[in-house]
Amino acid sequence: MSKLSDAISGNSNSESSLPINQGWLRALIFMPIWFLTIMIFVGLGTVAMMMIAGVDMTDTAAVEEWAMGMEGMGFASPMMLVMSLLQITASFASIWFMMTIFNKEPLTNIGLSIKDRGQEMLVGLGAALLFIGGIFFILWILGAITVTGVVGLKPEVMIVSLMLFVAAFDEEIVFRGYVLNNLMDSMNRWWALGISSAVFALMHAGNPNVWSTFVPMSELFAAGFILGISYTFTKNLWFPTFFHFGWNFFQGLFGFEISGLKVDSWKVLAHENSGQVPDIISGGSFGIEGSVISLTLTILGTYAIYRYYTDGQQ
Image (cartoon, rainbow, N blue to C red; front, side):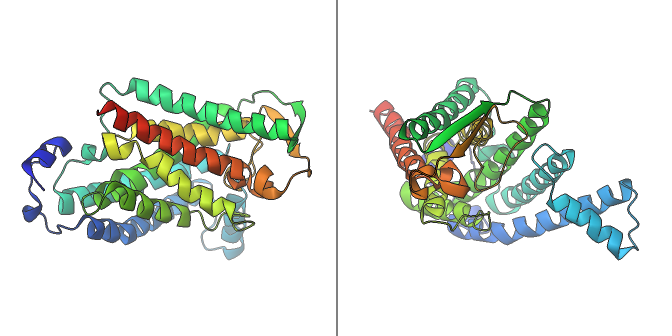
């Protein structure tokens, strides 16, 4: 790494002083460490919650009953928030380990600086509202969805908001903050985005109805680009984090599934698919992330962000 690039990234160590010089290899090593750390943190946290709840750990039936209850918990469940907090703690721990041992950089160098980033946070949230609201409007105009009523905000919206923000922040520090960041040390912007986006999509491959058509996985792959493109210019996580959070929050607010997961905790509008258009347009059971309209707008949005930064550098 040149002195100029070291200065830009805030890293005073040259590549030759790192235990592993190849960024792609550091990203590859990170993944099993991250998985293992999550298993430990979530596992221990789950046992602790069971003990606090008074579950008899020697009673197999009681343990299985409690576990089944956990599987059915909704977005507004305090347990879901606790699990999200455990997971992001594990993510931070594994990234800190990698940054300390392999990158020789402070944890904040993944893009955590908040100085002069307030505008990016607001723009990310506003862009998400415009994006999801625009898709809703297009689907309504096309007759793909029929509005059945207005539900109104529920008290659970606060805990849901916190849980969704933690979950979005968790994915951003992992897939953009560490994986994409390190891939960019080994390859150009587009290859790094492509690989990190593929990993991001594969992490959602087990979601309900994700294989219903070719669109859901294509959209998840494209989402990695729109979430990561600004990071390749700024090396800062706040725009993608707030855009990611808003993307999920506003989907639920408008009554859509989130990556195939049904929501009812905080939706304001109730609607249903009219059945008058194909699933690849309406999104079907996967929600709008299964719609070619969402996929098209994601690609266009990625290009718009790219042009914003490239035009600004001229």
